[in-house]
Every structure is written in C-alpha cells, then in structure tokens.
Length: 249
Image (tube, rainbow, N blue to C red; front, side, top):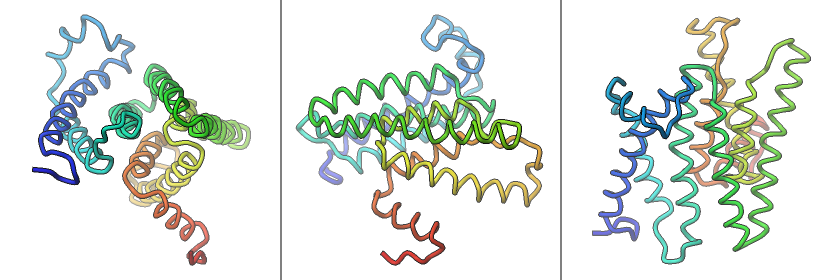
C-alpha cells in the first residue's frame, strides 16, 4: 500500500524513529539546562528518574510522518536533502521550544549543534548547487543580524534586552536551513505570533506587563509553519497582513 508514492512501511518506520527521537529529546530537555552531558553514562542512570513523558515522542512521530508525506522519498540522494535536513532539525526545534518555555534559555550546546549540522548541510548542498549554499549562508547572517540589531537596540532604548542572545543564535542557525527568504518569513511570522499571543496573555492577565515572555517558542512555531506550509501561500498571507489587506496579488 502506497500513500503519496511512499510505501506505508516507511511511514511506520518514520513513526518509530520519531518516538525514539522524542524519548531522546526528553532526556536532552532534562540534561541541557542542568549542564549534564547529553551523551554520557548518566543517560542510563538518570532517565529512570525522569518522569515518563509520552507527549514529545508522539508529537515528533507525527511530525516525522507528515514530513515524509510532504517530501517523499526519492532515488537520488540529493533529492532527499530537504527531508533529511528537516528530520534532523525538527527534534532540536521542539527541544528549544520546551527548554525556552520552561527555563527562559536556549542552551548554547543546542544552538551550536544546529549550527554545526547546518554548516555540514550547506557544504553538501554546495556540491550540487553553489547558489543554494550561498543563500543558506546569507540566511545565517540575515537571521542572526536582524535579531542582534533588535536585541542591541532594545538594550539601548528600553534599558533591557528585547530578547535573549539565545534567540539571536537560534535565528542564525536556522538561516542555514531556510535560506535568506525563508528566514525573513520566519522572522515576520514569529513577530506576528509574538504580538498576538502576548496581547492575549496580557489581556487575560495570565502574564503581567513586567513578566518575561520567552520569544524562542514563537521562532520555533514560525519555523515549523514554514516547513509545512507552501512558501508562496505564506508570503501572500504576510503581505495581506502587513499591508492591512491592501495587497491583492
């Protein structure tokens, strides 16, 4: 039986791999904020003490299955690069969301791992098409640069960080996966989500005006949206939103 030209057994395999990755991410979410080495003997000692969490394994399994449906499997290795790229990225994104939401930090180790894998992928893409590799590098500088400027300006104007430097590093790393145009779209979606959800949280008094609202989860959600929603559709929606409906393209 085939679904979207992919045998159903591949979907089963994707789900199993997703569950395994989700279980590993549970451990990472416990270890990284405590500065415990992720790949160490403690993984076998501590995991027994961690409260069982089946939500993340299920979420990542579902994301892997949907990812496989969207990108399929091709005979040519290079045609599978997008599938491989996002399969590697998604668990790290989910980890960044959970840790930033709970602890208001995005661990340097997590951002560095995204960055390292992104550079390797950029090199592989460059073998096929140097222009794709250039676009990924431009995305890295744009993503990190835009958020660095916002952070520094926020510090100068408001006297405090507009967002953490972990967000700056995260956006720089994501630029390697999404390229220049992709990282700009992610930035716009993240700011839009951040504004809407922050207003709701403040209006409902779930958060107070002096409470910190982590921005990392908005970046992660924006990145996941950009993976699965057609790029042209996203651009069209953003143009309508930011032009207050005047865009008719």
